[in-house]
Each structure stands twice: as structure tokens, then as C-alpha cells.
Length: 540
Image (cartoon, rainbow, N blue to C red; front, side, top):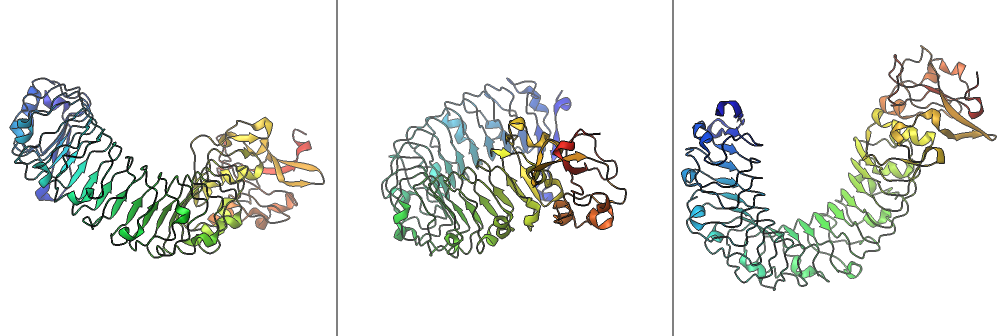
């Protein structure tokens, strides 16, 4: 019975627009041929989910007087469903990832109230241009088998969004005027364009023609409202800066082209906030002046940039995100003047060998710092960098030398205002006896404290029981230099040297915390170690 399998959800929308949802997805539909089970649907049902039921055909659909949304995604349909019994109310139909190869025109034409049709990831090569769909606004034909632009003389009059990306379109001869189109996506086809192409979409604001064999820029004279333009992975060799200047562009994605950016003197697009020039032939960061007030996000990954200097950012006063992954940068930049404005800095997959606290101090407003895939062997005590907000730091795939200082930085994360984003590839490359071990599984008593080698004596950490007077957890406090670690700084706790614990450990390490999984100290829920000469480890 239907009552055994229905799941009802009442969406908290305004009282006059409540949606009553019935979810029969994931094999919960008992009858996938005659749909007799659906005859017991509540009359008030407005949204029906039938995805993942292995439905092969819908030749007749039961009457459902209030149905507005139907989800038939991830089934096995080969033909467009017959929806005549819900044609008076159905507004949105989702048919993603079926095997639909044909649409009978009469089955589409009867859906007079249809607003949105999602047919991505099917096997269509033709779409019927029926009349009478006066409310039809959104058509998604992504990843089908179109070789020609579909003829849409009727449907094209009302369409607002058209997605035809990832087909095999080489012929655009059927293009006709689409006066209401706001967003057009023709990404990853095989067509070339002529200079008059955009006049078919006079009010378009979002254009994606990426990954096509385009070697000339479109003529923007009849499409003056474009705010988002994607021409990545084409064959472009120059930038028509004069023709772009009159556009209200906010985002320009032109990565993976053949443009010689070193000879582009400047770009004047006063509204541009996002500029993506990944995978070009840049060796230095352009110092353009005309984007100083607008540019917020600059993506330069996959170029040949060797250095990042603070002066490189002097002209970008509004910049908050800088993406420089997959370049040839060998040292962590010291952005003493311009670093404060950055919230995201991506330096992943470069050749950076080390990071110091001094280099981190100017970027203290960052909330995301990517350093994965570099050549770093150590990390500073990042908590001492005093980031203003909680920052996520990616450090995976670096050839770390596992030492006490590295483990200190690693284990300080839970106590500080930073979080390491890990993917399980944080391993020791050296020393030899720890090679291949995960940082998360190494204790302080397994590493040499290379910061405190004196007179040829190497020190290591050894577990000990803290004094009962040391009531607050601390990370590192050394009696000689008062090196206060993460917990002291970030949690503003008192270190044990100041409450009497130093008398028993004068000249040695007071305490250090760890997040290891072995049994923890019952008072403070931390591991406690003291530093002793390596030769004394194991001595009675």
C-alpha cells in the first residue's frame, strides 16, 4: 500500500505557497509499469520524487490535480513521458540521466504551463520546436548528442536560460533570435563563431562559450549587458580591450588560451571583479592600473610565475583572493604592505621550501591558505602568527622532516584559531626511521628536539606527570627562552613556569600538549612531556 512507503515533507514556505512533497525515490515505487500505486496520491501533492526507480517508460501518468514538480531523474526512460493527465499544472520536469533518445512533439506540446525542463545526460540529437509553451523559460540539454544547434523559433521566444554544453555541435545555422535569453551555455562543443554571433541574444548577461575552436572574439556591440563571460580553453591570441570597456563585465574567465599577457599593457573594464587567466604563459604578475578599484579575485594558476612580491599587488586595492597554484614560486612571499587585504591565498603546487612566522604575519586576515604540494620540510608554530579569523591551511603532499617543532605545529591546531585541511597524505619523508609514517600517528617521544641541541647533546621528549599546581594546559614553555606556545597565546592561559613548576625542571622544557589517541592525562586531557637528553631515554 502507498501508506507504507510514502514520505511526506511539508516545506516551510509562506502559507499561501506551501509545497506538499511525496518522496518515492530509491526503489520505493512498487508499480513501475502501470503506476497504479500513484492513484492513491494525496490530492494536495505538488512535488513528486520518483528518481532511481528503474522506470523504463511512462505511457500514461495518473491524474494528480495539483502536481507542479515531477522528478524522474536517474531512471531508464528511452522516450519522453506522457504527462497529459498533469499537463494543466506541471511546471517543472526533471529527467536527468535517463536514456531518452526521442521526444514526441505532442507529448511536449501538451505541457502548456511548463516553465523548466531538465534533460541533461540523455541521448537526444533533436528537440521539437513546438508552439504554445508560453511560460517555458529554462531548457537544459547538457551532455546529449546534438551535432547542430536545435531549431527553436517558437520555444526560443520565451527562453531565459539555455544550456547546450558538452554536446557535439559544429553547425549554428539554425540559430534564431531569442529576445529573452539571459544565460546561454554552449561550453565544450566544436563550433567556431563569427563576429555577429551574439546579436541573437540582445539582452544576454551570462555567456559560456568555453572549450570551443574559437579564435576570434565575438562582436559585443549588440550584446551590451554581459556581466559574466567565459571563453576558456579556446584559441584566442589577443584581448580586444577597447570593445570590452563598454560592457558591465563582473567576471571574465579566459584561462587556457594563447594570449601573450606580457604584452597586454592594461585592461580597462571598470566593473570587473573576477579575472581568471589560468594556464597561460605569464612569468610575472601583471601590474595593471585600471582594475585597481574593482578587481577582487585574481586567478593566475598554471602559469610560469617565479616570484610574488608585495609590490606586485600595489595596483590592486580591492583584491581579496589571489590564486597562484601550479607556478614556479620558490619562496613564501612577505606581503608586508598588501597582505592584510587578502582573505584567500592559494600557493599550492609550487616550489616553496619553508614558511616563517614573519612571512605569515602580514596575511593575518586570511581565512584560507593553501600550501599543499610544495617542498616544505617544516612548519612554524602557526598559532603565533595570530590570525584574526579561524584560518584553514592546506599542507598535504609536502616532504616533511618529522621533528619536535613540526609535531608541535601539527598538534597545536585544536587549541588555536587555525585548522589543517588534510587528505591523508601528510607523511614524514625523513628521518629514515619515520619515513612514510603519518604525522597524526607520531608521538613527541619518537622525535629529536632539533631546536635544543647543545654541546653535541640531542634532546628528546619523555612522558611525565605534571605538577598538581600546573592547572592549565600549555604547549611549550622553555625555562631559558620562555618560548610560549599555542595554548598560552591563543587561550590566554598562564604557563606553569609562573606557578611554581619550574623549580623541578629548571633549564628544561616545562610541558607540551599532544592530541595522540593513547590514554590522556585525567586532569587536563593532554599528554605531558619533559625534555631529557636522548642518552637518558630508557635509563632507570
